[in-house]
Length: 484
Image 1: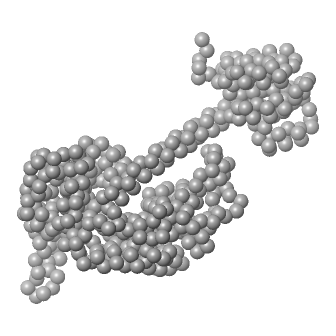
Image 2: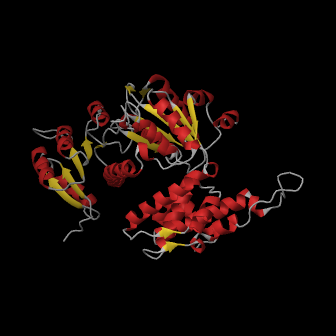
Image 3: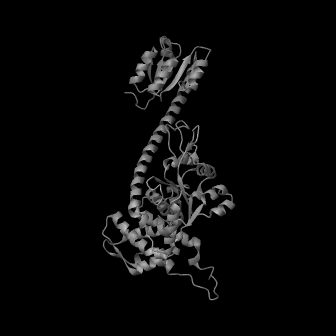
């Protein structure tokens, strides 16, 4: 029985001697089929899984080029080589340019050269097939992610509806008032604030209070897309734009057409993408990769950043014209430390959500534990608070009460060492470890990573996804913090 992985060659020539010579050239490496005419060869291709066809050009009734044209229509991935005895090769060059023929070889051929050409053709075919397989796998993954995203959006709407954003502070009330005012017009909005403060929630709030509320909301993290893929991801591409582009693909702007596009962490967008974002914002049109003309889009843009974009502009890291185009209406989301009144209702909300997520009987939380959480500075803001509450529920006894000593040690240690005011009214001791930003940030990061790993049963891939970082970045941080 032949090896199913062995490539199948079909050799076609109306001269028996040439057929035998071709068969002798390849039979040691490949499974070789033979045909004495174009009609016979075409019938073989229809019923057999042929990888490559080598055909004579001059044959009665059907020429080699005509045979390859017909094969291209029914099995386009079959590699096609033509042998010719003519010195005039203009028709063959046209056939190559039109994609009908991969290569032509003049008679009499050199067996060694022909074997090299066939090997190269099959290697190219393998790469193209793998490319198509990966593209199809990516398409299926995108469809699956789209379905999951729709389900997650349903969760967001259910738990974080526009009128049910969890807050009690005056600061958040003022922010939502500003968001309501700007939601009614298509002005570009820039949301600023530290990571984890809830910028995306405010962006969704603006969308749900706008005339576009019935259309799609698309959130994109500008720093999470590889630089080489940014253009095609944001603006799409046309079939044939590059190797592997087997069909048209919509970019984020086209997917969000009619709705709202949220550019999360826009300050991390690469320079070449910034130019194209500016054009899309100013002119309302995009240019998909491989397209012959631009496409119009109707998109409302809300952007966010945890960076000082003005400082980035001064440093030359961010385009000034794009900054001015984004900075039409700015909303600053204060850190959780500036709105401590929100901590208690947020804890209650996250407790309820953790119970539902884990399908566990509700647990209570003691007043002492609540006060401790209210006293902590939360450098990771709402996101860190949510992860800590989920960790507390995960480690608690079902139906019990979360006590003070269950709260993460780094939180208890931090709150237990408040910065003392200096007698002279200055900012205090510069050597005070509780005011060491790097030390406190490292402690927070380490606690967050441990929480994610616990929640994911030690699965580092899932934990990285939960933390919104790459797996490699997680492994490096685990090594740095001594987490096993």
